[in-house]
Amino acid sequence: MRALFGGLPPRYWRVWAASACSNLSDGVYLVAAPLLAATLTRDPALVAGVSVAFGLPWMLFPLVSGALVDRFDRRTAMGVCNLVRAALVGVLGVSVLLGWVSLPLMYAIFFLLGANETFYDNAAQAIIPAVVRREQLEKANGRLFAAELVNNQLAGPPLGGFLFGMAAALPFLLGAGAYAFAIAAIFSLKGSFRPEKEEGAPPTTILSEIGEGLRWLYGHRLLRLLAVMLGVFNMMFSAGAAIFVLFAQDILGLGSFGFGVLMTAGAVGGLIGSFTADKVVGILGSGRALFGCALLSAASSAVIATSASPYVVGAMLALEGITVVTWNVITVSLRQAIIPGRLFGRVNSVYRLLGWGGIPLGALLGGFLARELGLTAPFWASAGVLALVAGAIFFFIGNRAIADARAAAEPERFAGRDIGS
Image (cartoon, rainbow, N blue to C red):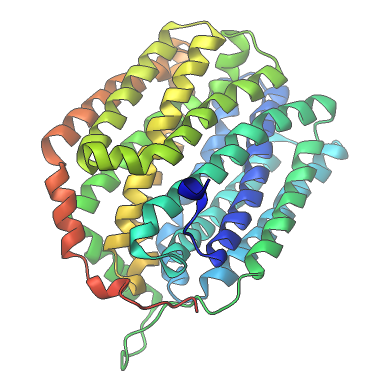
């Protein structure tokens, strides 16, 4: 237990607790949402519209969100965002309870939830270097991903499916309550988490700050490549995820509870990945580990496309969970170690614009492919494209490139300085 959880400071665990509570809410309502949409329509494109609405803000708002994160206290930003999310999910739950729910209302609420998430996620990643030491980043991020997976994909989905089967409004009302606990956890963290500014620096505008973040990432070849690759990954994963509820019902023959249980398979794999990612990096190196993640993801998508067995599909989702979390631990820790603290929100927002902006496009692609070519088509497309990404990593990103980028990062970023104290 000491090896898995020891060594991280108490204030880190307050951030961890806030993440655990908010991710439990996410896991409950993100499974209930497609189930609710599927009761309103059987059109794959319209069901995928919920995912499109949720992902669209990553094409519109991340640059502004990143600039604001670099202006405000990151702890306060996380608390306010959870307050807004609690209100939105609560409104959806009440609308279901009163029989007012419709697809346009769902699209609007999930668009607002997605816009809120562009701000929250940026602040949550920016606060971690202020509460742990540099050499603890992989471990700290791994434990955060463990909490995310247990609550978002392991506990949340079956709970959401079970509650939806009892009453469609229950998952959303419970989700609003879980956000309230997250608010309490993050505001129990003491200290200032406002980013430091350079002494004597003149006042700047939002546009000039966004431009600074754009220029920094454009000039960093490694992070620029990883951002583009993440965009391709997320686009293809979104293509399958957007219609997965129909795939599970019509091809695998699962009901709402079975769908929720199946969704936990990815969390089981992700939980394994969250505790082993730092060890995998130690054995293979970061570059080789990323190559393995892409190759295994392509293979798992191909197997899903050929199978009608929930057990086989569940095993592949578990494999994808391992690869996704390992990829995230490596790349998030790399960004936290390389990007200057005062620029983190802005540069990270550009990275995530490239990496997450393709999600709504992938959801649209998945809905179109499923409608025109069948429910397995998005998974075949994902297998082919991710195989090409694996080849690109093999040729352009290696252990040496990542080690050189870490060595060149400003050492004073973590050298005895603690903005969270």
